[in-house]
Length: 147
Image (cartoon, rainbow, N blue to C red):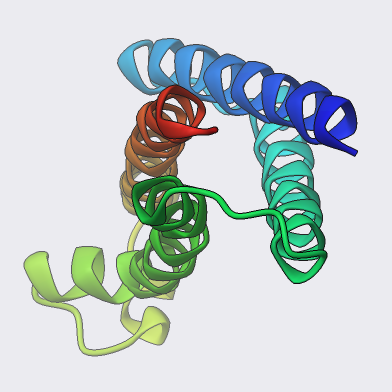
């Protein structure tokens, strides 16, 4: 069981690290990438699997240091808050530009509409890239505090 937990942990670091690095490049170059979102979602799924395996390990009576448990659970919390910020990204961009709703954007000329959409997508990408990189740090720290 410990070996499976270790392998899944390494996979989660690799997926989230890949998503974070590729996403940072995409954010920097203002490009959208399905690969980023696939890596991120796969990484999130593997992190949930890792947490479930860790939970089983603890329920089996295998003690782990409290710090390991904290670092192991924090990625779930970071993902949750990042998703909330990602959802709010569109409204933040609209508010910043003085629009009351997305219908106001529809009245703009096509190039300006595109600029608003790109700004929203960039903000969403930036939030999720930061979350992925924070999660990588937390997962590496969890590995360093494991028993």
